[in-house]
Length: 417
Image (cartoon, rainbow, N blue to C red):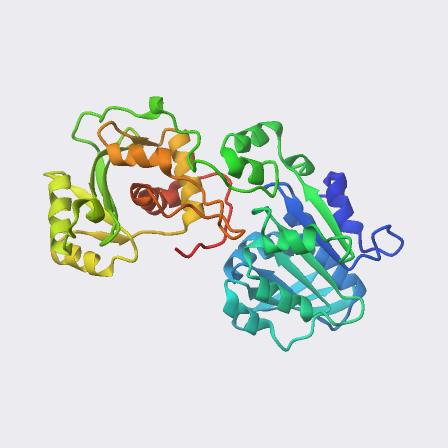
């Protein structure tokens, strides 16, 4: 990428800190907006150029949701470009320390992951001349505020970028809505601000999402999740079960004792996964509870004589998984990132990669009643009602199909249920 190919908004990011620039007196910058909008590349380059131009022998913080994601999404993209410009760098991974010699100056950059509330303790006590926080909306507030508090060197600045979340998110309310009071430059990016994307690629990305995720990741809006989760799903998307035998079979399970237990039998034909049968037991409605052994027997009946590759099980159902293993089932603990799973499931349903078959009445019933929680406390949460078949479907898609999907990769805050 050359400087001539930067968009006007990217050039603003690259030059805002230069003396004489109209924004040079700002103490922070926030770049938010659509995915694939070019904000991460421009901000990363600008941050390291600023640090190497204005400081020598100083320490800086470079933060992401996790250290591995930061290295993958930022450092692996930025450092080779800096090397092309003459920078020399070395990394001590055991210390999460990057030393950069550039423009006649040498500075140290400490790498941090802001995964949860405990991460704030990792950054205490150190003094920074500046921080770069990639995907800041995914980090806990305590970690971000602790990182900001570390910037006490004269001339220090703070750099933030992120994709949007809900309008009640603390970062939106404190840094974006109050940008002027905080002497912060806020730049909102869209895909049109990334000159490396062709119109064809932009249209492809626009087809990947609907509803709230389209508004956030494509339009870059901080909007509230509301209404049906799978609001695009219509009755004409339901199909009759395909003729058997099928190419491969799995069973997915959301386990409950007081809450309902839902199991889905999945079969693949010509690259499409069909939910061909299901088992659903509501202990409250039936006025009795089933044991783990009874659920295992129900699973065996659901499978029939079909060769089941594996059973994907609710990760909290430790006792049930042990019963299944003892009976000879191959068990996989389900991936349980709720929002990422919902997005992937929606994508697979829309593209016809996953099909719910007639006869799966409880799954189809929940498709109409699975909704966002308007009292989510500023976070995106689904109502914990009518979600058991939805969970077992999400477990299957996330665990079995998740690593096989291509397209936009978007992270989100882990939701604790």
